[in-house]
Image (cartoon, rainbow over all chains, first blue to last red; front, side, top):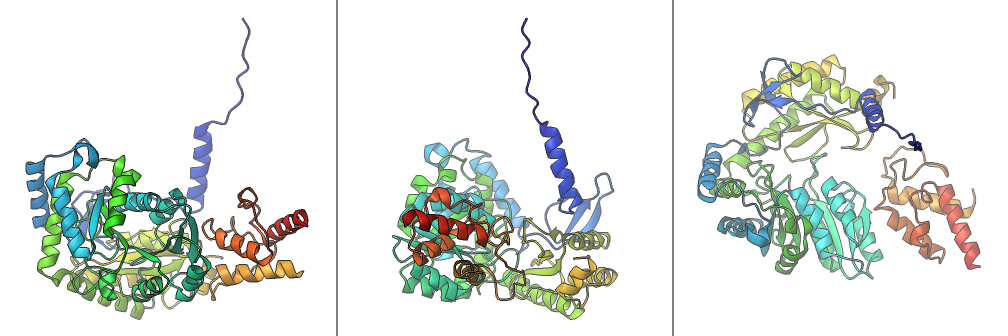
Length: 420
Length: 85
């Protein structure tokens, strides 16, 4: 019998083990910690695996309004489960649209000052689907260079020309609008609040510029809906351009209960076309009824009072001031995202580890989540944090900051200490 | 450095670096693989070269490798200009 020579092929296990080892060696490996409790200001965490659960303050959740485990939201989700069941086993256009899906779309349209809304399983899906559904080769997408990764992915799926402008640089944006004046549609794309830096896009000036040049405006307001603006309607409200955004995406996975789900709200024809063509909408299951029910209750809660977003604003102000006075290098801003800059990935991880030992749960962020040399600990405030908890967390930050000698230090001094 | 390389270098510095960016930029600095220019932002460089040097850069030639250094971009412009001439 003739023998067949088997070509030597690389073992996939060897290849990926080597890559994973390199990630670990570079200090870039991300560890998950197991939480044995509902989401909240204080949670029970098991870390490392096998260790006894311990209570820690949570300063890294997107639970801005503290509604993730709110009794009214949980009760509404239970009621929704009882009345409309667990799953729909269908996409929206086959047999996956319940009355409550359309009700949530109507409520979001009203809340966000739009003309119509379409639900997605996540905001990542909304961003991944909306550009490809609406724009093509005759158009250009012009994005701020720091937009969220899901927008970058969505732009990649789209056949339109892509271009970028320097972060929040309106002069550069105008250059781009003029440069692409030959295109059918020019779409200016920005986050409302930038997730890693916590700064707000200057939407009043962006909208004015887009309108001046006849361009469309797209805003991802995931880190703003529910709490930025006097009544929590997001960055458009904060900058006085509520109702003037052509396309706005947002998530229910952060302030609005924190489960999952997202939407595109905007001009009627754009939303209608997205409903016909957006692939994540057409080929992925409908948003679970239990989440729809919970989100409807969240909209009721935040429409009744601004107390939670007011407390969040106060907490963020207190926290930012405390860190700056202690000597930390903090990115300036006015949102509840307060990044503590450490620049080096290992340093960020070491501080996060020591803070955990002090009872404060935060995470180091580094490449590829942020640019190389821009590692940080991103702290996030919640309306659920009490003043006593924040004072305790601040004391822990100061203690750990002293240990690592980062208080009052510049970027160059911190990097020099890391041998960079 | 000749005018072509200087023009490209100036454009890259102005278009892609922030004012406080301290990274050194030379003709051999890796632009795309070095994280200075991303694939989305490459389009403006391509359009700039086409306008400035009255060229059409075919998509097949506008690869991340060809656009990775000022030197390789200049070589591409020189090649396409020679073909046109």
